[in-house]
Amino acid sequence: MKDEEEKSFIEKVARFLPTIERPAFRLPFNERLKWTGVALVMYLILSSITIYGVSRAQYEQFRFFEIVLGSKFGSLVTLGIGPIVTGGIILQLLVGSKILDWDMTEEKNRRKFQAWNRFLAVVFCFLEAIAFVLAGALPIAGGFGLKLFVVLQLALGGIIVIFLDELVSKYGFGSGVSLFIAAGVCNTIFIRVFSPLTATCIPLQFSTCIPSAGNPPVGLVWNFLGNIMAGKSREALLTFLPLFSTIIVFLIVIYIQNLGIEIPLTFSALRGFGRVWSLKLLYTSNIPVILAAALLANFQLVGRLGLTKTNSEYCGLMGCFDEAGNPIKGIIYFLSSPQNILAKVISLSITKEEILRALVYLILMTSLTTIFSIFWVSTSGMDAKSIAEQIDSMGLQIPGYRKDPKVIESVLDRYIPNLAFLGGFLVGLLAVLSDFIGALGTGTGILLTVMILYNYYEELSAQNLEEAHPLIRKIFGE
Image (cartoon, rainbow, N blue to C red; front, side):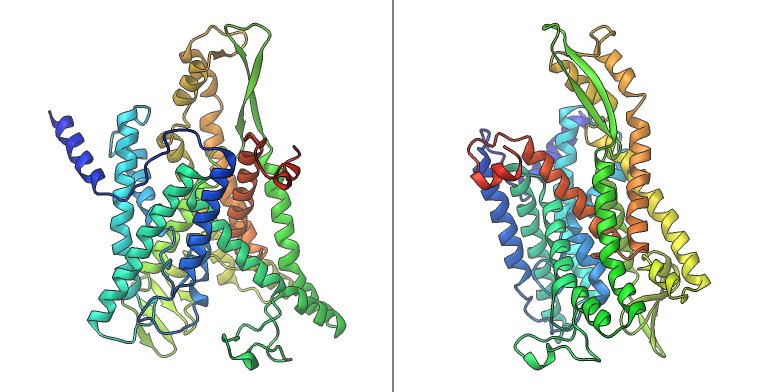
């Protein structure tokens, strides 16, 4: 009786949640590609619409938020994918720790998980909007009424992002969460590498955009060439280091993406025919990094609540920030990644405090990604039992073993838990080390982007490209 009441309540809640129904039939390639492009263009348009009531400001201190959450501060997508991911984190922890004892191999529990995930995402649209306003993340020149209107605009933007995420997931390729992160990071990297304009550039005020000796261009390529021509070899090396680091991270991630274990399978009804089931080293892909980075971003946001000015510092319960908004003391200092440690080592300017911060952040990040990786396997249908049932339903079995899903599960159980642990730890380690060596777009951002683009390449390669544009077929070797 209790289960029926709970089911009824879940259905009532789900009925009022923003959702997009799945298509009744499999969409052709060009149609799915079109909807993916539509969602991306809409997201970029929303990111260029400034929230009414917010003063113009620089948001350098929130660059990590923008990269990790696929957001654009001061615009309608200021919240980005934050509400979606935060709701997912809460459910992952509750289900993974068995506080909510839901068997995710059952269809009704999966539907319940998805319904609550949408519900929490909408709730966090409002909660995070309020937190952003209370934390002073957005400069608002007005009283309570204007602040309330800003909160409503932020929440509306977050709800639209939920729709766009579902649009991509059900009608396009991949997920909106991944697509928006990759778009934001690619944009950041392109500007950081090639932009000839200065960091102080103000739109329509061209005099502020022209580089000078004391105000160099943002693009590292121009800085590198300028230092080489001026004979400043050490400055040129430090300028080239982020470019080199980004390339190295790209190559390492591509290499690791191809590592894994292949389980041979045969068709029980057709002797001599079979296939392999690939279990990748990074079994849970980039999901653990997204969840861990979003959790840390939320902690950093909470750390900005209730700040009071002391001399040139702004301090709260979790630590202190400088006037530029960078953490300098307290717990919040160790919850943020130290950027470009390698450059400081080369220039002999690193301190003991920065080394301690780097070690704490390394341990914290790898621990979180490992935990989220293990929880994700158990809640997303990637555990040994679910995969074994999937293999058995396809009429496949492991050669040399009798046809029984329990047997397949026992074989998979030798690998999947270990891959979940090792893959989660390794992806967290890669993200942190990428930060330390100064990869563009932050280590977490570049790692996520490379993995997202690689996953897109794999997914598109597996599609039927007969109806695709000739250029697309050529890219994928068709």
